[in-house]
Every structure is written in C-alpha cells, then in structure tokens.
Image 1 (cartoon, each protein chain N blue to C red):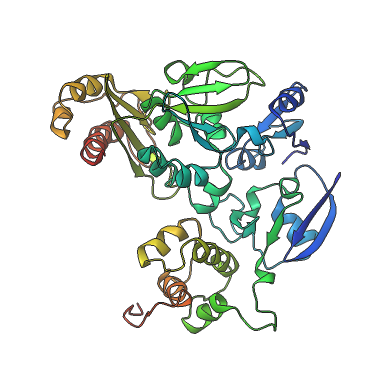
Image 2 (cartoon, one colour; image 1 turned 30 degrees about the vertical axis):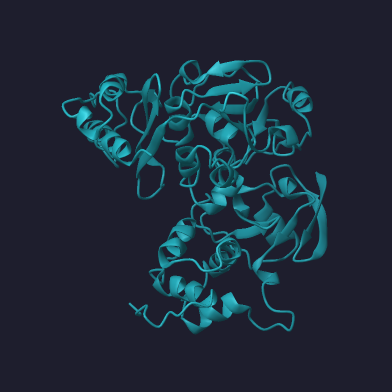
Amino acid sequence: MAQVSMTVNGKAASGEVEGRTLLSSFLRDQLMLTGTHVGCDTSQCGACVVHVDGQAVKSCTMLAMEADGADVATIEGQANADGSLNVIQQAFQDHHGLQCGFCTPGMVMSAAALLKENPKPSETEVREYLEGNICRCTGYHNIVKAIMAASGQDVSAIAAE
Amino acid sequence: MYNFEFEKPGSVADAVAALGADDAQALGGGQTLIPTLKQRLAMPTKLVSLKGIAEMQGVCTGDDGAICIGGATSHATVAAEAGAYPALAATAAHIGDPAVRNRGTIGGSLANNDPSACYPAAALGSGATIVTNTREIAADDYFQGMFTTALDEGEIITEVRFPVPEKANYQKFVQPASRFALVGVYVAKYADGVRVAITGASNDGVFRWTEAEAALSSNFSPDAVDGLSLSGDDMISDLHGTGDYRAHLCGVMTKRAVAAAA
C-alpha cells in the first residue's frame, strides 16, 4: 500500500492504495464519487471518462498512483457553483441526450474536453470525438445535438430521429 | 489484476535501474498493458512508469531534419505537434479514441508491437530509427514478428526519429468493433524510393510490401499497384475477415494511400 494524493474537483484528496488500484476504483470506492461509472472495464465504453490535468482519460485504464499529484475533474464537479446544471448538462436535459443515463457522465466529460479544445465543433467533429464513448440507448443523435447546442450553435436544423 | 509495486522514476537512468528488478515491467500510457493485466495475462512484480521522465517527452526537429519524438510522448501530442510530418501527425490523430490518445505513448505502442497497431506501420514505412537507452535500431531490424521486437529485457525506447518524406499517407480500414486496423497501409515517398508498410494483415506483424515499393518507386500512382497481389495464406484469419480478404484489402488500401499522399 502506498499513499496517493491528488486534487479532485478542486479539493485535496488522498488515500492508501495498492499498485493495482485503478483511478476509477479510487474515485468510486474510496472517495465515494460514484458518478464516474465503470461500464466495460476494458477502455472501450467511455463511461469512466474523467479529466486528469485537463485531459480526458479513461479512469478504468489508469492507475490511481499514476494520478498522484494530478488535478482530477469528475462529473461531480461539473455543476455551476450554485448547484445548477452547467451548460453541457443542461443541454443534455433540454435535448433529451440521455435515456438510461449510464453513459452520461462520460459523455458529459468527453463533451467538456471537446468544447475546451474546439469551442464550435461541426457535427462530424462531435461524432468523431465521441468514438470512445458508447451509448446503448440513444443512437447518439440527441447527444450530438446536445453538444452542438451547448457550444452555442443553432441545432434547430438537426432533426430528431 | 495481480498486485504489483508501482514506481515512477524521473530519469532514464533511474528507470533502467528500477527495471533491473526481477519481473519488473515498463509502463507507458498503459492503454494496452493495463487491460492485459486485468485479464491476468501478465504478472509483473513491479511497474515502472515512464511518464515522469521529462527527457522522453515531446516532439522536436533534429539537425538532419528528422522529426524526433520522445518515447513517452502521447499520441495526442504527436497529433498536435508533429505538423512538420503531416502524415505522421494524422496517423497519431486516428489511433484509438481521444481519451486513449491522451494516455497512450509512441514508445509503448512500438515496444508492444501489436500486429494491428498503427505506429509500427508508420515507423517501418518511414524507415524510422528506434533510439533506446543503449543503442539505435533501424525499423527494418526492430520489428521481429507479432508482439516481438529487437528490444532486450529492460531496454527502454527513449526516442523515435522519423525522416520526413516528400509525400506520405496512412490508410486504415478499421475493424468496426475494436477500431484497430483490420488492414492499415502506410506509404511514404522518399527521394531514394517508396516504402510501403502494412499492419493488421500478417501473422508475422507489420511488414514491408516490397513488390509494391518497387512498382511505386518507378511510377508513384495508384495504377502502379494493379496486377500485384499478396498471398492470404500467412495473413490473419478471424471472424472479422479471412486471410484472402485481408490480402485483397492490402492492395486496395495501398492504392488509396498513394492517391491521398501529400
């Protein structure tokens, strides 16, 4: 066991972990931040996406000790300071970008990473960026629409399917 | 996963020392190794992360004009910073998905030498030099079969040098579930000839298609590949495609790469 320390959603967090402890396990089982979901556990599905030092990563495929000293952001830290949904979260609600909701934390974190590096993505760019996030409910259409809307673009021409 | 110790040295020398322990294993971005450990297909006693070694990070241009990439550089960084070699940057930009590209490293990919990975094709197709803590290895000598390389136990890829071609392109026919290359063809045209490296197809891992290289060296056009074919006998055959199908795709993707080369 070894000590690991990091900043999670702006707050200092630390704990004792094994070498094999995954970042997703540390967040969920020790910090009780269960908004980060583990879907496939094989780095395919993207439900576990968090940001480490500003970059989207799959937390099920990173060791907790690799994040020692890092600045980690999870879905729990995405809401506005007053507790209201942030612009991406609100857009997912407005445009029905989720059904069962299991993939949604990863989708929102990937969307946030995309919009940070590309504030006005095209529909194609959104779909390409979501290559590593799998949704079994929506068919992606309304997720893409929500992200386009969150970027401030007019989505009225994107028909619901 | 079986448990292991974790160590994150700050220099190549410290990493080499740490890897001297019995059953120690280097860890790049972990995008292959961690899933492998989860399957209990490996049981290292210690993982030595190479991510904390500053001298193994980043992209620069060497005195001879070659693009030099630190062994621990992520695919995302290569995609963003290797603009002097556009085909290489584009190849890096289409490995895995964005989250995987933020973690996975060029050294990790080349050390693993997955038979369907993209970077082995780029390195072999470019005649790159694999620089380790002890020596420099030409790509032609480096790749020695599926998951097999010239690396010795504990040897670390510190840098990869890519000579910049006149034109190059990588065409990947993705396996729709894994997004790995079902067949990927890297074509690079240098002043002294054309190189064609193919990943995803052969049971022996990445290889050069020398007949296509000869034809393209005298006539760099898609038509030059007409009439050439590879045997499907030694190609990977699985539920995603037969060996013959992959052999056929080699020709198709080579033509597309030549047509798109810029």
